[in-house]
Image (cartoon, rainbow over all chains, first blue to last red; front, side, top):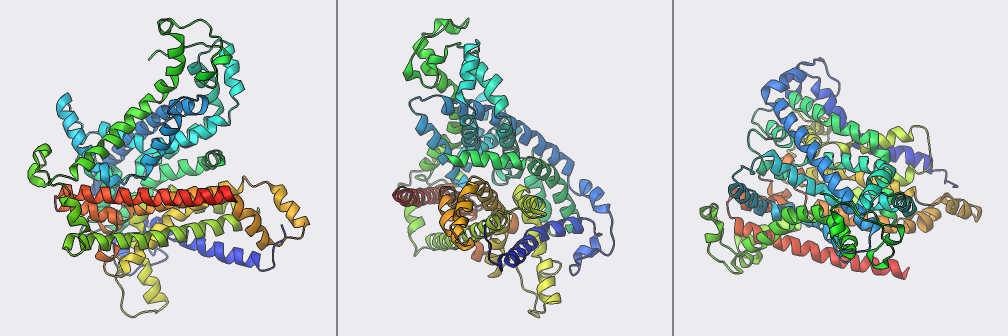
Amino acid sequence: MREPRWLPWARVIFLGLLGLFTLTPLYVMATSALKPLRDVQGDFNWIPVTITLQSFSDMWRTVPLAHYFVNSLVVSSISAVASVVVAVFAAYAVSRYRFRGRKIFSVAVLSTQMFPGILFLLPLFMIFVNLGNALGVQLYGSRLALIITYLTFSLPFSIWMLVGYFDSVPAALDEAAQVDGSGPIGALLRVVVPAAMPGIIAVTIYAFMTAWGEVLFASVMTDESTRTLAVGLQAYATQNDVYWNQVMAASLVVSVPVVAGFLLLQRYLVQGLTAGAVK
Amino acid sequence: MVVSTPSRSGAWRGAERGGGDGGGGRITRLIPVWLRRAGLPYLLILPAVLLELLIHLVPMVIGVGMSFLRLTQFFIRNWLAAPFAGLGNYRVAVDFDSAVGAALLHSFLVTVAFTLLAVGLSWLFGMCGAVLMQRPFRGRGVLRTLFLVPYALPVYAGVITWSFMFQRDSGLINHVLVEQLHLTDERPFWLIGGNSFASLVVVAVWRLWPFAFLVLTAGLQNIPEDLYEASAIDGASWWRQVRTITLPLLRPVNQVLVLVLFLWNFNDFNTPYVLFGKSAPREADLISIHIYQSSFVTWNFGSGAAMSVLLLLFLLLVTAVYLALTTRRRSRA
């Protein structure tokens, strides 16, 4: 590609500004977490004067952060795994069978993505209260209710992406497995799933991230004992007297697992997006 | 669930094609072959369908029902006893002379302006970033990874950091503007008043442009290298290549990307909620927050439900028109 002479300069300047915009908050988060309280209360300082790890140990005591952390971990992992299992079966049906209602199913599932969350938040809340009463268990405020809710949030995208992945696995492969005596489910589990593993991992990460970052439903459907990081941290940061150094340290710590997972697997996510977008 | 239906390859890819079928499983042998084969795809999508019904469709239908009730806090325990309001909730919501209607209209307009700005800027940044990083250069991989971090970060962690940066007395923004650049003498407020709208747009773009970048980078990888080489031999300039190869071939990707960005921003609750708390400043009163507040803070669920239904209808309309327009243009091209 012949590039005009100004392009390298434009590239450096534009990408530089974009990098500054993108990375400044990350820098602020990391450096403020290392400052003592008095240094985050006055005027902002680009370079920390005193460096201390105090906030990383204090934050666990100011709010029950460890408790929120465990709640988030439980809810996000279970909903991610369950969502992917459900999505694998559904995507297999859509990819390999031409059944009546296939098109409607795909469109309907995807279109749930556009529902304003606020529309079904309250009815869902009522369903969980009433269903819980009918079954004699407390669903509202429980982790189970949150897990079921979150798993449907990532389901549409997961199905869509996995259909793309499964389509790229040659049907001849699972036909061969069928000749060898596996049923369709056997062919799915033994041939298609291993071949589409990158996609499945990417979708799992996506589902985990979705649950880990959700705020709206968590703010209504959890109580003190099931509170997740999303709600706990938000409350932490809107107190009257905010310990910004601790809040930044906490933000940093809760971000590390998802960011690391995402960055390690971004290659697969890009592949998945590509596979889905081709169609 | 026991699902084992060994069948021969002829039956593959569609029940309608038929074909020879081998033996059967222990239990499934009792089920007629045609039912087994026709039923399997339905069995496979059943969990997904049930979950979507439980979490999305049934609540949505109930939500629509609630919008016709005068559902205030007195009826929360037994909401079926709430008096029927007919179209009353809707009438109040679209009566722009009343306080409720005027506030809703204002919030709607704020959301439209916010969405246009946030989608436009996110797409522009993502597009420029992806195109400028199409050719390999030293450090490209690292830069790509760094650019994706805001999208990978949990929403609240990123937005909380911004709200720290926007603090009037201890934030970075005022430090730079007032102490370092001396643009104003007075430290402005960023999270209340007129500036809060700008703050909201900045945070939304920061969070979403990496997604546009990710999708467009993936789209660019699908454009065959030969196209650029062939056009270069023909003497096409870089700018011409962008216009005649890159942009047209990205059209299907852009079609989906812009729609997704639009829906996300229009429904965005997380960013304003974490940035401003339960009640947003008037200038940045996005529709989701507005409805949340009219439902949970003023305890008027019927009215909140009616507003959500109106929002859904609006989004359906926009999506339908958008898809009709973009798809027609694509098939004509």
